[in-house]
Image (cartoon, rainbow, N blue to C red):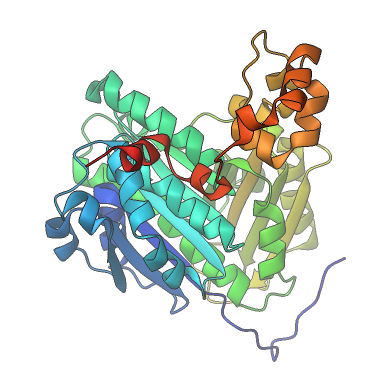
Length: 393
């Protein structure tokens, strides 16, 4: 059922906070600070490197891990970035309290962005805030070590954020051409996040003819996994279906299968001459790209001063990855007797049902062997930090 909104209606402005984490994330914040973002968007730069932080232009900044790194950066070590974020957890929580939506951006493969970003996402989820992450993956020429760091960081981020948009750097050269300058290439990459921010801020803070509100948006991004996002402007005499597909198939994004998406939000901005058949065609085109049972929410805002014929923004979410498809039952079918202690403490009854009889009996008869001196809160702290705390000084 559509909700028709009159022009006289007023609506509060949802607050969007963008955390740029690490060197790449702070560079993105710098670029975003140069455009005319709505007043509801707040930019926060986050880094371990004090010198780099001084050159960042944002509304707020958080130098994380002053004790862990002493302001000298993470040294390309994700575990140091993780420890720095945990040290500064209170600062993040204070900054996030009033947010309606939290965006995270970073380049994966190094130390601060790779290690800290999943922790920041976890802090936001603990506050029950919707989290969208936009991350880049390193160039192939940067080597196996950075690629492995990036993959590990991405896998952890997928467990913490609602939606993750992935931008491989190698796509920049592939799509933009080998002669594009490095600065222009990164600007194009950052434009993805810019389009998301502008589109969402305008969509959920303005009353549309067919309205999309904050709760609609939260319903769509609550589907965990990869996400795809694109904005397309319908050119004069261009086919409408082509323009909609262009918004759904952004060439700079990582290769993903939209047929696996669980939900999508579509924001249409058009002149007052838009035809009903055009609106129906947009909806039909989106549905053709997605599973038949996907949740699709389409909104329409009329703007008589729109420069293009029509503008479409599409965000598709809940796109499964192999990591997310591995459920609890699959892990219980392994040939060894090891169990994940996090899953055991969260779902002890379910895990007991799947354990081999001899191990289940052993856990029942000798519970002290497996449960003594276990603090559930400690399990949120990475192993290497707990180990360091246990060492004599």
